[in-house]
Image (cartoon, rainbow, N blue to C red):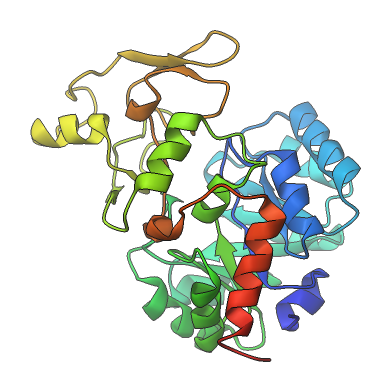
Length: 326
């Protein structure tokens, strides 16, 4: 199942693993790439040495194309240089001003994917030299910049960027969503929540159980709920005891929210995770996991079982093939 996106990025099908920080392991990234999709690793929160180790681990698990994701709100020259030193071929950029990262990445021989929330921003990204646009709709899980639905955003972006491949993101969790994205003119689907149920994802059992039990109405988009380490970054997550407590208190601002400073859980190194922290519940966390930021898109109601990542990719492609041909 190949198209312009697949040819440009060297994949055999148009499925892209969304980079979910903290729970997109090298094993998951490699598994999606080995299944013919494009695995993308979130590395923006790693120091240069950690980034290099992550890339080397993925490369030891797959010979197929994969990429890394950098956050422009935390733009790091050292991280970019580490990507170049490790021969990273695909770099995904999201949030904030990309600065000179795009021309430098292009000069180093990298292909660049830029996430955009409007057609205007997509057009500007293409002018910078983007090789593909990730059009992220309001339905997406995790950090979501825009307020336009995937159904409305994708065709607008497609019309704005000409021949540049568009990857549809937000609320897509199965082959029907991929087929719909292709019908809207996109060349691939960017999928995160469905892969949180992959066997290779190091998701905490409590988080995973909440995902599997959730309906399409069990998420909400918050402007500033989980913002202690990353302010002014709207996000979508599962509703939980923390969000309900905050809403019951009248949605007070930072510094006035109930339970601020409460240590809900601990990381493997013993460091505490306080309420309202932006932290994906990893399998090694211990404590009140349900009260943490359990990122999820609105497609979560379609996530009903744990499977190997390769099986998820195959199911998505097989279902899409029954609906569209190209």
